[in-house]
Image (cartoon, rainbow, N blue to C red):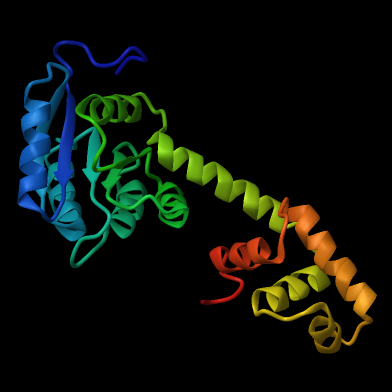
Length: 223
């Protein structure tokens, strides 16, 4: 392996993992026309992928990259990715899914994925993600990267809140007025107003409605 990519006699070996046959066929057809990437197998779910990798390891024939769906029966892509990176650390995983929520991206990356693509990605980007993973780099869909960045900023800002401010935020999200917040926290109404103001400032928000949506998105309250 070189930083410039594989040579003519070292094509990137890829295992496709998706529970939809038509998706696997489409990806195989695309990779088949590339000179530097070779599909060496297919799996119908996460457990099937693990079984195939175990057999490949025994034969000293592990793939370089696994292209992994997220939502599958028996074992999903997150669980399979975590297992693969623990058991076969030299095998890279590129997640390819229909879901772009920041929470799923976090989970995939924490499990060890080296890439995260949406299924509407064009063929060139899929190839680029596989090549990046082969080089030990991380490749994220542009829209996914934007959501991930915003989520990280939100979480970092949320860590700046004091315990009282977080309590006030939860009450705001529950539709409570400053007077209600004061009563609930056994503080004065001006103090409650100050807590709410601090919450908006620290989170970079401009209204109580935005604060409520932020709390809902971050799981502090449930809709």
